[in-house]
Length: 261
Image (cartoon, rainbow, N blue to C red; front, top):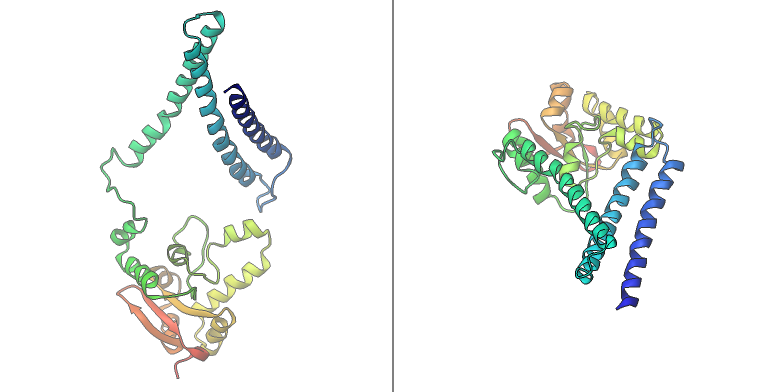
């Protein structure tokens, strides 16, 4: 039993050391992102360190409790210290529960908001046309065809079709793309090409861009109608056929050669 306990303790110490190395590493090394900060390194490594320490903490509580149970008949100064340690750990754990409990109550407005597991259900209520278009793409399209949609900044609704279907797009939320690649030129080329594809009245020019990126479907939704002139969007009926239509969303399947024969 002692040998087994020793191996368990050694493993816990290795985990604690690993977490410490992760934290130490963050102080000396970080990925250079576009804003020059080390937030992403701290975010990625710090999360892992806390997960590892949660395992170590659980083992520490178990070890202290087991030690106290084995020697509870001999109430010594050391035993009192162990009990005090357990009590302190209990207080810290209880304090840590304050945020998840209060935050959950706040985010759900006192549990009065609808409770659901479907991450797209909100879309059915907020923008039903978009919801049914996404459902159609998820259910009717096979493989990984490329879609064209309006690009935009992070934490906006732009780039929403690719994120909700898993289908590749020419360019989505370009801020994150830049953050991970740390260069702009290829991204700006794609952004410019997508803007041109949506705004040009020249069928040959639009068709060339669709061919360049191997676009199979063009998405014209409420955001595209807001960003681009309607007369320019109408040209896609000459470059493909509508396979999904609703009052505010049309999905075109691009024809071979970029135009309907």
